[in-house]
Length: 255
Image 1 (cartoon, rainbow, N blue to C red):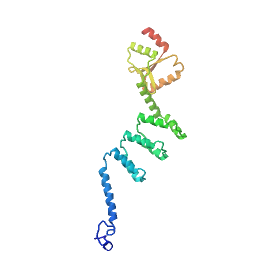
Image 2 (spheres, rainbow, N blue to C red):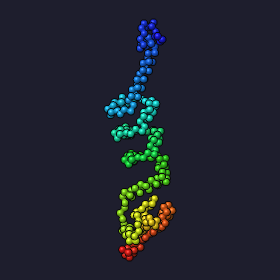
Image 3 (cartoon, rainbow, N blue to C red):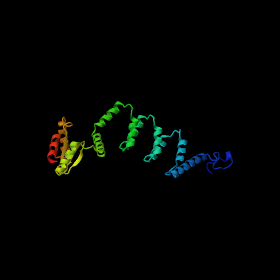
Image 4 (cartoon, rainbow, N blue to C red):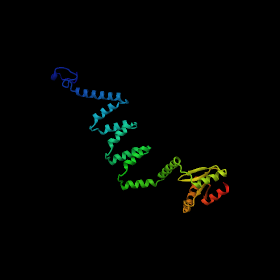
């Protein structure tokens, strides 16, 4: 039998390192094969919390190679985490200083994800009081001036106005009564982009505004700019402005 040295041991043990110098290698390869089979058998199984805690405790303090870390990361990518797991991760990483490369990797991984309201609140509370660098402040200012930020702000404002509509003023109530008296079908507090008109008549593509003497006394320039925005951007044919005096006169005559 090839590989055996009968002169040293006198016997032919296939497991003996003296008789068979390749026995150590065979044993090691067998162990590797058994580990691979065990890993394949356990793949996809849901482990209990006690089992996970035992595995975590046994691996604690070990230095893992970059290949092992990459395999673990690839295996965990896309897996949903329980609330308990998320809380545990948050407690572990609290007050831990991350390297700039780690921060960039986290930022790239989360780019484009839609965050929940609770997640946004948590991030906002965590960042309160932290000093921001000049570069960070410049990025925030540039984003606030971008069209994307303006559209997002307008959409948030629209959702807020839809959820919590402002109460009608006296002049708006008079305007709605007049439109009812003229048999006009209209929409109250209709939003067009960043502006909200008091009433909109879809059949005539006409917006109607009730301008109070106090709030609109110094806003003629802003009113003209707003009218141009509505006419050019949303195809409104005409914006009818009724002052407080005109509304009160029309109420006496028609109502």
